[in-house]
Amino acid sequence: MNAPFWQEPAERYPGSLPDRADVLVIGGGIAGTSLAHHLSNRRISAVLVEREHLASGASGRNAGFLLAGVADCYAEAVRIFGREKAREVWHITDENHDRMLEAVERDDVGHRRLGSATLASGDEERARLEESAQLLRDDGFESHWDGTRLLNPRDGEVNPAAVVGALARRAKQGVIREGVEVTSIQSRGDEVSVRAGELECRAGLVVLATNAYTPQLLPQVKIQPTRAQMLASAPVSRSVSDIPTYSHFGYRYWRQLPGGEVLIGGWRDTAMEAEITYEAEPTDNIQEHLDSKLAEMTTSGQVTHRWAGIMGFTESGLPLVGPVEGMRNVYLCAGFNGHGMGFAFMSARQLVDTI
Ligand SMILES: Cc1cc2nc3c(=O)[nH]c(=O)nc-3n(C[C@H](O)[C@H](O)[C@H](O)COP(=O)(O)OP(=O)(O)OC[C@H]3O[C@@H](n4cnc5c(N)ncnc54)[C@H](O)[C@@H]3O)c2cc1C
Image (cartoon, rainbow, N blue to C red; front, side, top):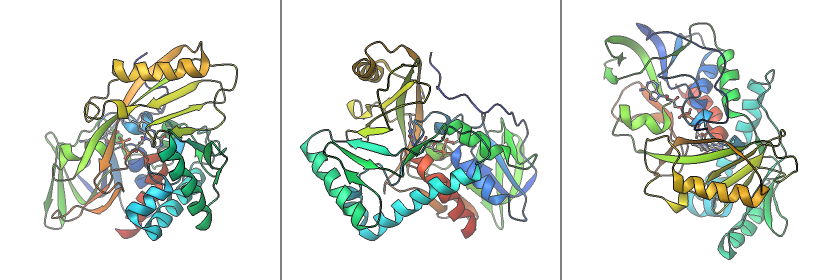
C-alpha cells in the first residue's frame, strides 16, 4: 500500500562511477534522463549516475500533469515575473510538452492531451483565474473561463515513470549507471573531481540533476526539499473527473486514468512546516484529507496506493539552470518547484545548448 502508483522502469542499468567523463550527470529523474537525451547527439562522452534506480525520486512519484506555466496562475505570474517573462515561461513549458512527447513517441507513456482545469477555492482565486484567462488569451494562448473553471486545452497527462524509462531506453549502452551514490564534488582547475565513496571520476563538466537533494551535495544551493503526498484508488467505473484538475492555488489536484483509477494529491497547505522534509513517507493527517476527497468523488473508492515524494523549491519560483557560483564546470538543472514534468526537458535542452 505504501508505494507509488507508477511502476518503476523495467530495465536495470547496473554500473559504477567512470574514471573519466566529458560530462557527468548526477540524478536519474526526468531532468537527468532529459540531459542524457540531449547530450546523446554530441560528440562527447556523457555518463549519468543515479544512486537508486531511475525515477526513484519525484519523477516516479508525481501526478503526471503536463501543465504550461508555474504553480501560480498566469495573472499572479505576471505580477511576480513581469508580463514578458511570464509569457516566455508559458511558451517554454508549452514547447516542453511537444518536444518531450516527440522524444518518446514510439513508447506508450500514457499520454493524453485533453487539457486541464483549475477550480477556484473562493472569490479571490476566482478573480485571479478569470483575469488569467483574459491575459492568456491576450498573449496568444488558448485558455478560457467557463464560469466555474479555467480551462487550458493544450495541457495533458502522462505516466511520469514511463517517460523517464522511455528516455533512458534511447541512451547508448553504458551511459546510465544505477546504484552509484555521489558523495562529494570538487572543482579542480579544468576538471571536476566527483567521488562515490572510494571511487573518483575526473569529469570535464558536471551537471546536478538532483532537484530537492542538491543541497545534500552542495549546501550553498538554495533549494528547499518539500514533500507532496498522493493516493490512488482501484478503478472506479463511472467518470468522476474529466480532465486533470487543480484547485486551491495548486495545492490540491486530481485526475482519473482511462482505466478508472483516481489519483488525488496535495493538501500540503494544511501542514506547511511539517512538509519541509526529506522523508518521502505519507503521513496520516494529509492522507486523511486525500481520503475525504476520494470519498466525496467516488463514495466507494478503495485506496490501493499511498505515497510521498520530495519536490525542490527555489526562492525565485523558477528552476535553477546554469553554473554553480564559485564552482568551475559545475552546473545545475534543478529546482522545479513541483512542475518538473512541465519544465525539465526544455531546461535540459537549454543547458546542453549553453555548455
Ligand atoms: C506527489 C508529487 C506530485 C507531483 N505532481 C507533478 C505533476 O503533476 N506535474 C509536474 O510537472 N510535476 C509534478 N511534481 C514535481 C515533479 O515530480 C518534479 O518536479 C520532477 O520529478 C523533478 O525531476 P528531477 O529529475 O529534477 O528530480 P528527481 O526525480 O527527484 O530526481 C533526482 C534524482 O537524483 C538522485 N540523486 C540524489 N542525490 C544523488 C546522489 N548523491 N548521487 C546519485 N544520485 C542522486 C535521486 O535518487 C533522484 O532519482 C510532483 C511531485 C510530487 C512529489
